[in-house]
Length: 394
Image (cartoon, rainbow, N blue to C red; front, side, top):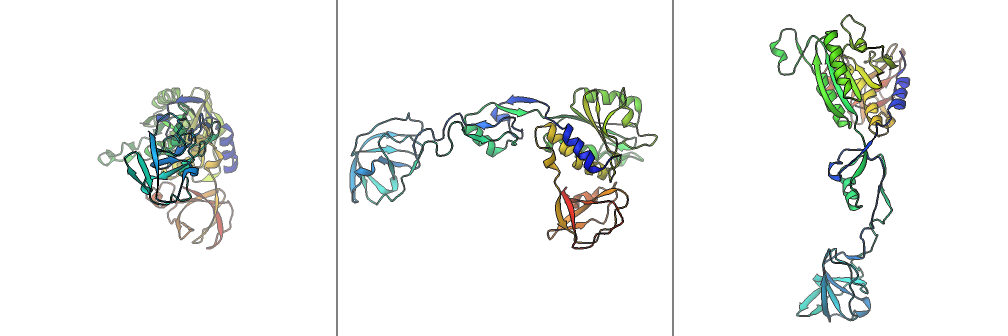
């Protein structure tokens, strides 16, 4: 049994990216960039008008009102490089290339059109209303760094940079296998004597998806070693990570550690924490297997502590950055933890940490109130109201 710090460090060390692939821009949402987005062109590509109006030379401006003959028209998408004669104006629209020689745009609200003449009736002001070439970004600029998650903002920039497809990290393929004779499918348990709804795997499945994993299967089996061995082997064959829920302890019906052909190559066999001591992580035939306790709160606490960084690192993100503790002032006293480091569920109240009354590892309703996991060191010392303690967003 090792400490939380040692177990967490081992997760960070083994959670390395699984590889990369190229995906079309339209399929990139939520993925992690494996290489930076570099602009393939400048934006704007040439000087363009920021307003609808008339392109002119400043040297041709006079005291209002004055008129200039209109010679031509240019709109967004017109080829750049058009010229115009001094002493004239060109009708121009937002986003259109500015004709060579023009150095400002007079907005149409300041102009009255009289046939082929543009009569400027109000002073044009100091603004030139021209977006200069490369004023947004220039060809070769690094716009989005590698490791950034693609969202609606980054996808906008990648598209503007003329980049598609995008190289992203592979998403970890995850299989979930819940075990327990007492378990029933939610919606059916009330009609089965002695059964309880299997509530952990739906939560872990949601956790996996939100953390960037690709859920490939979620199954439930009774505590039958023969069935479990077949199910575990099949699940692991197509997955990068198999999550076993339940059977992680040392009881007669706890089989999760013995489901494979050989002994697990443990990264850690258990961790000196409460709740969640039976959690384990191992390599099986080059694949990863994470064993979570069967108590709901224990499973979700250990998922937050170990599954979050594991999925992050495998998927190309910073594993260590997923578990960051901050200082919180206690809103109420906290009794001594005892001989194991304890992660106490708490809610945030007036920017303080209020420990929840119910800390039973099998409790589930209290999860609705849990905003934080307070990291309480082992020992016989109480924490008093107002004292600071390390907390992790839960």
